[in-house]
Amino acid sequence: MGVSVLVYGAGGAGRSLCAALAAAGLNVELAGRSPERVGAVARDLGVPYRIADLRDRVSVLGALDGVHLVINAAGPFARTAPPLLSAALTAGVHYLDLSNEYSSHTHAWFRHRDAVARQTAIVCGSGFGGTAAGLAALRAVAEVPDAHSLDILFVPRGSSGTAGVLRSTLSLVAGGGRGLLNGTLRRLSVRRFARAETLPNGDVVSVAPVSTGDLVSIARGTRVPNVMVFTPVRVSLRVLRVLMPPLSVLLRPGWVREAVVAAVMRRKGRAETPVPAPRMSYAQATATDTSGRSHTAVVAVPHTRDFMAAVCLALIEEVRGGDVAGCHTPAQVLGRDRLDELVGRMVQT
Image (cartoon, rainbow, N blue to C red; front, side, top):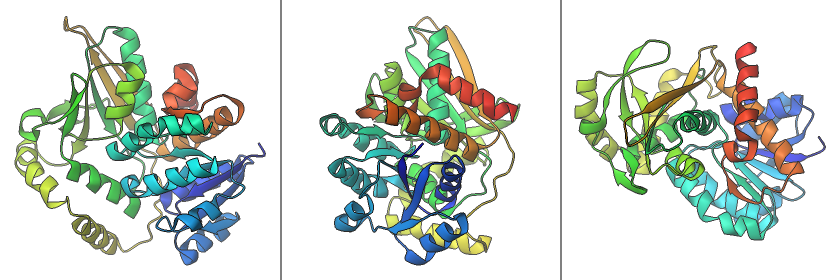
């Protein structure tokens, strides 16, 4: 394609994405903070690399020199997205990220006018959670055009977990349960809203409300005023209702989350790069109107990393060839038909 793409983040997601983009023939480079780690991963992949510390704006701007588009694959995005996005806008570089964190989506939409002024594209939520949930929501709302509420359930599988993924997950837990009620973000009582849910594969699990970027992006993409997002928790419903509220308070300090990450990674006793397992991942959306009529749509893919790479490749193509300045969701850029095609291709393979 002849496009210079910089992937920031040498963890599991960044590594697999960089490999996929290089295999597709893109001019891609890897970037990150640690010369040792980034260099080792880049040499293993056979791609060039650049060093950029997000705490040093000058080094980030230097790393973006000559770059057409940067993809942020380094979580937690609440910490990495603001400085990288700010530098990208200054440099006139298109920005994609894999985040599904509420704060980073909010920040991205806050910079919409700046992106329009700079004729730069921002596409947040290009990973499995944001893209698949957005597609499921579009499918559900198409069947219930006057939907008043959307319940989103996402079950990402196929990765054994990296430090970056764990940091993002702990950030979600620390954020507690939130939802959009009549267009306003409000805290949700876990004791009230936690429930048992039957997954598309027939498993019955406990689910809890979480604050994800879908609360921002899906509301903007569908104009539905009431949106709640749920994720499974591997404990009984009774235990969930008792433990989740104090756990979210306990995990709010950043140093506590970092201590948990360090302890978990030491216990696993392995490198952060996981081996994806061929298990199905789900995003489910239920749209309901004021009369009680509802429709549930499900998006299921066997390999989240492959799906993520396919979405990013399609987004790069659209950003390169189209007028997409400003902040957008993947569903807004690609449209339902293109995303349906990508999902169909994943399932067939």
